[in-house]
Image (cartoon, rainbow, N blue to C red; front, top):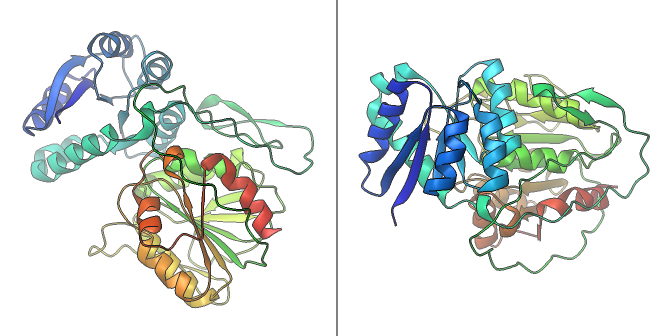
Length: 380
């Protein structure tokens, strides 16, 4: 089936180049272009594309505002283009909050220097997000954390939003329409309590929003140390950790070599590198191996956790493309640890969790809205 794409960018060169790259794929059809956010909304309503590629800095209306309007009026998978800077990372995270599915670095040099690589990456992203759940009915309201909390105190989150810190602050998912929902997966029973020494979470596409929804439900005194692996460029992970730290009651930071695991702290694997844990609870950050597709890689972190903590790990695999995490989960299961997967209906991309379920490695399958509550039940 041909994927219909709307290309939005105020740069004539970039619009033409992206259109040329996509049109070279016989399974992709560029059905229109727009030069600003207002045109993007009009074109999305008129043309009903399967995917929209969106710049964020444009005249008349920026990309983030356009995404919000599109998600309200004609929900469509959006691929954002972003700059590989700290500010670009902050803006991209705001765009994902607004409803964008995924992002790609906007690098003119790469387009001219590595056209084949750029073409492959862009076309793969377009195809993958065209199959995402971004058009599904909106998810049910999250279940409140079953624990008393102090009165909310507002702090400005990145991008200028104000988010309550003390109360759970699940990320809003835009209202979504059309396409039949996946068949519901039977709910797993409530988890058994255990004194876990580590909670390890791995995710990719859709992960930034999914992690916010899960981690904002955890209390500040959550008893297990947490490690997070999100497929993300090196320039983005620090900004993402800062964002999570502002939104959550637990502390969140980008992991550094020599960091020590402790309850109430989540360490995010730095982009472009690998994160491992030793038996003393010390984090080791290693250079990214070019032979590995993912930097950071969920399998690497899960595997080191299996070696260091045996049966005392609770691993969770959230939304994402591919199968990263499956082999690491296999090692964890062999050691007696527990592995959970996000259900298909609440995933943006049901790739990584599906790999866990199909391999028979999932001890439980939970919706995103239930995940935080069950983590509290299991670890308290």
